[in-house]
Image 1 (cartoon, rainbow, N blue to C red):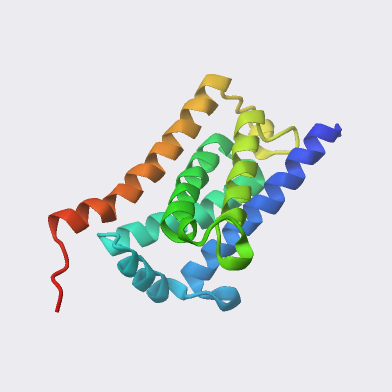
Image 2 (cartoon, rainbow, N blue to C red):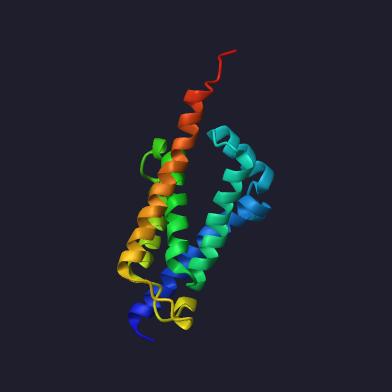
Length: 172
């Protein structure tokens, strides 16, 4: 095994399992997580509608996308989903707290996103299911999926903003 392939494997496993663990917290309440009902409540507070759809999409992106990244299967699609999710996490939740994660800033989700993008750019390496099935998308396809992931995240961020303008909350 070449050092590049080992590096990609380690990055994929570390980042993918971390994303998946956060998704499992939201989906199942594991490791002190909110579980589905708690996550739906959080999505409601953030202004996402329909709540069930956005909760399911975010859990799928994090849990399934993380596992796919770790396994190196359909890696460009997994990376696109994780990039879109990261855009939302960074700007909807952590941005207002500044950079450092010790103050709930965006440092940690940004680092995970950068690592996912690096795998998306470089490819999953030889020790991956993509390599096993000979899935080798071109650089243009990988780049297009990265852009689509980012645009998907921005579109998701626009939903609460648009809903607040269409149906503003009246002061009580």
